[in-house]
Image (cartoon, rainbow, N blue to C red; front, top):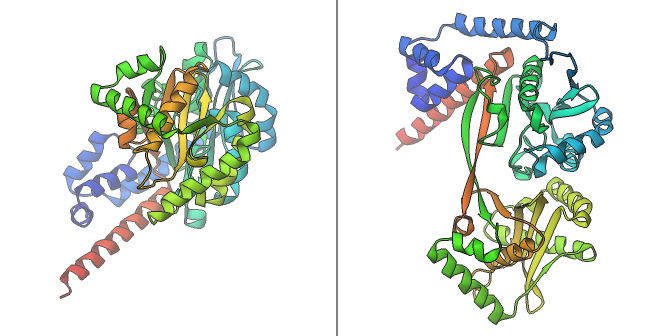
Length: 443
């Protein structure tokens, strides 16, 4: 049976199929493949065993870790009222956590849930919080939603602000667990134990930093799989703009100085947007972004109404406090580039941009110039890192001085819903392969 499936799916797809079916380690999966068959009884056993294990956990046999004095407890928040009630605690934890990032801010998370929850299938909050007496010492913002297939649809456990449809996804980076510096181990252990009690079929944690404490080997579930998600490229601004230039290669340094001279000769105007300018600058951002992408036959992220609503609300809330930065480069009073990003601590996260490209422009790279001018402005405000976030565009590689690798954690449980999902994928693959074979065979 397995040999026939392998012939149909190919080696890589077959390996993925086996890993989905069995949550055993890689060695056991290879052993099954080597044996040449996959007994139906094994699948049934895994499904039944997993369900039994889940019921035991739900009944309290696998209790949350407690400190010796019994003061550490774990609570899972499942409703918005309960979530809103701990906002002050969340903000206090966020301010102290070494893993704090833009998409872990309460305002980002709460705004995303408000805007996107109507687009989710059976979306339910599963926010895990860890408390020492009355103090919030750890938290991870999760939710469960259902995939296609009605009641048999796979139940996914993911970070809040991930899992949307691709055309309107917000693509957050540096998702993680929040914790007080002295409470890392107990928080990570408590979170994984609570996750183990939840009723889900597939866990997908995207775009975590490579050094996330969630990957602690003592706490990480044995069936967790880890995958690379690329890297965020960062420009180190420590010591000022000239010190940053010294960290670049000689070619990149010459390129930067040439762009700065071109901008000065062309008489560009560059401004960091204030509250009074917000409405016009946001409109410029959306317009320039959409014009460029639609000209290439692509929809552009600001073509999705929920995406626009989410970021419009976020800029209105955060720009007055300095958490959002909008910067605009103009030529002859006409906007050419608008940059959009967030400040967390001493780091600026560049998120999106809108840019007009003109063949006759005196600027060969207005986007790069805008980034450089914004770097200079941010340095004056104490920013020491300019993070281009995930992606390997050539301009990021040219202007960055280091990279922060990202990772993904996946766990698939051998549940009935997951088994149905795998069978449907297998059937769809057979059909695709068959149609491809027919098309190639037809004269």
